[in-house]
Length: 294
Ligand SMILES: [Zn+2]
Image (tube, rainbow, N blue to C red; front, side, top):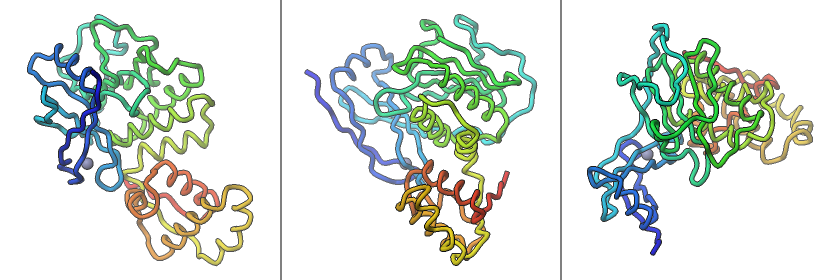
């Protein structure tokens, strides 16, 4: 009989007590495939500083978490030219590449893909893809072929809009400094939300800022008095709660020179993408400057 089991552990990074839910019968079925009596699951949660963190939990037949590892991407890129481009099925896998496995990027349905980043020498396998048995639906490469995405059959059908988003993503991953794995998942979730529309330059700015947000600082440029001049117009263009947050951020930045996005997710709004959206509007209105610390 299927029943939901709760199992607990403490995240060593944010120190919160985490409860992980799993279905008993599918867990036992999974264990039949396991050689060491453990099966792994990704616990994605708001971790330290409001950033998404991913812990891969190894769970035994009694639903006890026997060990877990927190996924952390390398912070340095290497500039070695890449010798190999397309990750074709049945191709001999490069053993030197470090594998990062994530069961799913959303609680229920989502994308299934492998992303190869040759300049980080990592591959991200999202959705338990079995290299030897499955065939990608589509391969999407960045301009210099340093980042390659293989999209596998998923609940989300690949559309031309989604391909445009993924092309944007692989090229940003190639161009920009290394991101953190939590911000990477955050970017995928953002794309997931907007998959039905075609990305605009504003969307590109949003995902660029998400990927880089661990190293961007914000600086106030103007006084609160000026904000009052445009407040009514902003309420017409956006909505009142958003303008309230804009006002708070402008006030907050008035006396500070370098505030980070992490700080805002702690103090103002836990949705990092929403805060980025608000800050981009404030930047376009001339109230905020983005300082890139890379
Ligand atoms: Zn945590």
